[in-house]
View 1 (cartoon, rainbow, N blue to C red):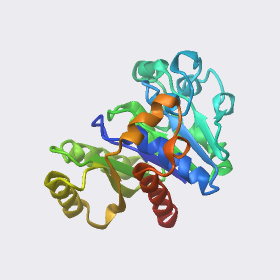
View 2: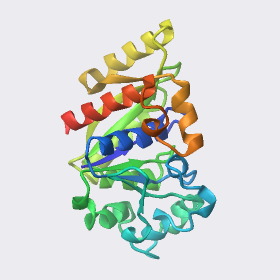
View 3: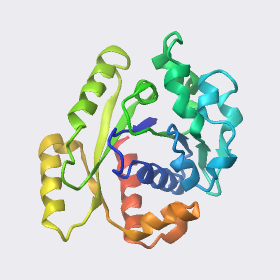
View 4: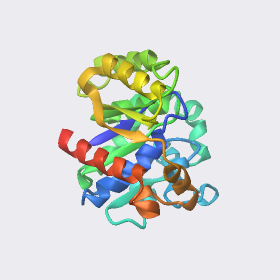
Amino acid sequence: MIIALVNQKGGVGKTTTCINLAAYLAVKNKKTLLIDLDAQANASSGLGYEKKIIKRSLYHVLTGECDLNDIIKRTDRKNLFLCPGNIDLSASELSLANEDQREYLLKQKLQGIKEEYDYILIDCPPSLGLLTVNALVASDRLIIPIQAEYYALEGVSMLMESYMRVKQSLNSDLEILGVLMTMVDTRTQLSKQVSEEVRKHFNNKVFKTVIPRNVRLSEAPGFGESIYEYDKHSKGARAYLALAKEVISRT
């Protein structure tokens, strides 16, 4: 199962979700590959790989300079593997613009390895450019993280238009696995109002699990650890464990 985490709006907890969902799927004995498709490479550093020492990323796979298996790295967690990102990914739009069937490049590269993993999670860049389109074409399902703040649904209509275009013309099997509410503060009226608005908009596509605002979640990437390693008893850890269980049950 290949799942892309997509939202062109930055700061919605997409990378945090990718890291911690991957970690808890691994905890549940699911062999999991996290693909860092973002030039900022925060998912890579969040799993303990310093950006400056990552010489080859998915960019070099997409341009044919190396094979996917050449760059996949083991992490400290059993069952969890990383395909790292680096700044070179920022050149993808220009480098791949003239490639034949450029929207299918990632799908083609994943064909040879997808059966080796129970889950492949793709951390998409905060845009709807060529890399994100490649992720949508390569994926079976989407998870859309939405922050519980003002303007939460801003830009979501554009994302849904992109999703429908890809589904109609490039990947008819693509479905939305779920919409995830992140950075939820249940003490505030605002979080409640935004959550209600999102549930009204997406109905049963919204995950029952919500990700709370939690300082431990913010601290963990600075130590190159998932929340499971950093503080598995925190509220954030319990939420991502619940999300992993819900993802498994939905798939």
